[in-house]
Image (cartoon, rainbow, N blue to C red):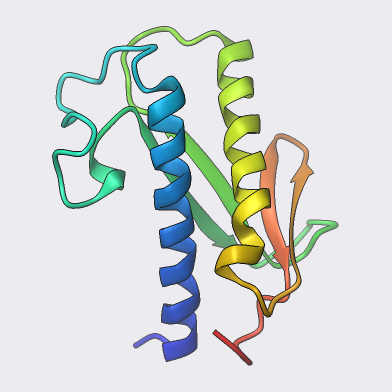
Length: 132
């Protein structure tokens, strides 16, 4: 069983990632062919299940991290095509900037930031369950 405020927080986070996914699909969604088993963008009930991108985050307890507790932002491209590192980096940077710009809209009462630590981006700051 999950804490109701955690469920609410992660639900808002999913809404944010769905909006970012939509923007990435519009901007980059036709650059590469979808994986053969992947549904076309907008044809399923969840943006996680269709289109070229799957945007999400996984909680990290922060052990060994200078940032501490955070959500590690994941930007996945679902294609068998070879995607150059420079293109992957551009898409990831675009996704992170969209997340950074929209965090205050989805979490207006929280102080949250997006920072790069090594090769990953993390959402960190007020992750308390005091407010959802």
